Length: 342
Image (tube, rainbow, N blue to C red; front, top):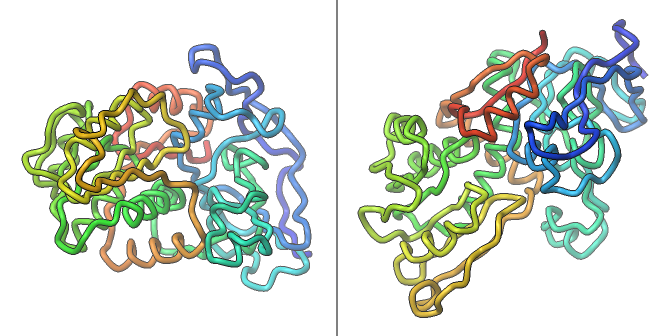
């Protein structure tokens, strides 16, 4: 195993007792630097995006899979050490660790190309420690090679916000030149919108944040209105990024005949009763989005490079990770929050 000199402890943040952000669920920790297994990379973290999934884990919306887990699954780093079986990466390479970190490879879902549905799938920052730290382990088979010449803070959000937004866009069945509604406009939505616009869609953004509405218009959206407002025209497709179940009937009612609503979040508050005639008739479709496949990641990163995607970030030093989560919870983040080493 190749190694590199470094400190013998890792500074970071872990979720000890999930609860409201005001209760301080993130606790500073120091742990021994992890040793890569045969198939792992050890990354010295250059940047780690702050995802709403991290907020759900901290607040207990997602039941913890283990005690005192370090969140963070949008990890950009330099390879500091590699396991003996790793051939794709060398020490010094830049690599990315994302949400999906393991699948069985043999179940019917994996064999059919739907590894995101694998019953034995594992996730960074949930089943294993993530990137709210100075170093993190990433399985090499689930890591992404990243360019050396780009700002790490702008690469980090691509690794979950971007990939999940891309899968949600594909799940929304947006037709060529179609009319897309986006509900909520944070880290994931502002990236998915750019892919849709580059592919010729008309995009309407519906969100409660005035700053997010301004960003949407800057990026090329045709309209930007309040979350519960009606778009200016019927929608062929819609994506719900806000974790607000009350918006499901609102978005369904905005769909044209045969339109599709994709719900992109891993957690959603309860959905109120739907009226068949108003919300589902005329063959409207309602579907969920569950994680992603590695192919989604590869396709999205290629598309992002091709169109020169603009990533709007709000950087925070690692020492202010609790503030980053609090700002995300209060919708004070413009674009995507990203942690960087102190």
